[in-house]
Length: 235
Image (cartoon, rainbow, N blue to C red; front, side):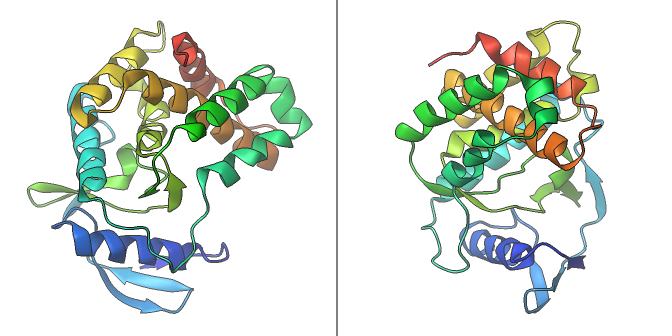
């Protein structure tokens, strides 16, 4: 059972899962019952293990395949419930806290600029918005997507969240592991590697800003290493 406190979050999650459940075959967890905007009951996944801890190449292949399958299902964007847009998400960078400005510095302006450029040449889809290693779970012999945020935007943005997760399997002593993920995601999804890397940079700066605005003491050093490894990308 999923219970939420953020306004409309449960409605969006339930709506996203129902929507993609109708357009894909077993790719997303099934919603069994719901209680208005407060909670929903989903089917139990067995054994329910995540991609966290699986080898980097295998996990990246599975995540890329999930992203491709969601993109290729190409359902229309539902009118209800209403979902935020990536453009709305990135307006947060226009008013970050002092803690974010100290830790992120010029990365904020770089991320804002990249987001503006990317949004000018984007198709619109209903995205998961937080598709990473612990939001894809094993169910018998298949992998199932769970816990969507729900946001409208460019499908290549879907690769961004996984770039900052399960970092121990990448190796942060050099950018090569991060670049390898980007190249593998491009190969599996068919998205342009430069767009994947640029969204990865922008979205992970935004993620750090969210965390630091909420708690100035948050340790974002590992995510900053990923962001800086993606600095090589440009549009």
